[in-house]
Image (cartoon, rainbow, N blue to C red):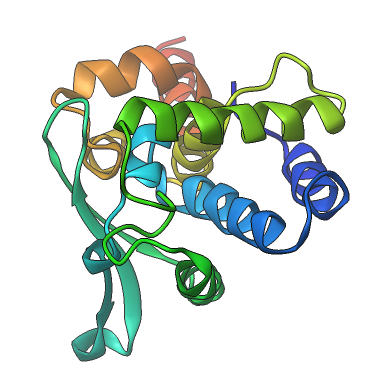
Length: 190
């Protein structure tokens, strides 16, 4: 279930109340990156510094270039400049020379993801959404694109799905333009 703009704003607002200093800045950057890139929590936590790219040939556009952990599918998605700057700032607060958000880069990936999931859960609870979860940020990314007319096939690629059927199964109900076209075709037959 995607987040409304108000719910997303509430999440961001609660972060500096629930978390201190460096931790708050890193969580804020992680949440914004997930929302604006469509990356899943595991992909975001294990994102390497080298996977945040600045494309000077395209006016300094920032993008995330990685492969989905779950499927191995290549993903290349541009992110807003202010999100990129915030991620770069969070990266400077991180102790790992390899990763953006996995602070030590040691231990298990599962532990690192679980630790971040705990913080995100705390953020959702503090925001009055006790059933909220990190995947809603990915849902919000996908649905916002679909509602703005981005074709399902392109959203599927940005999400790193191996099949458009996966995207359709999860997000087809949110494509109002598609339903409007279908409605007009039916109405046109009357």
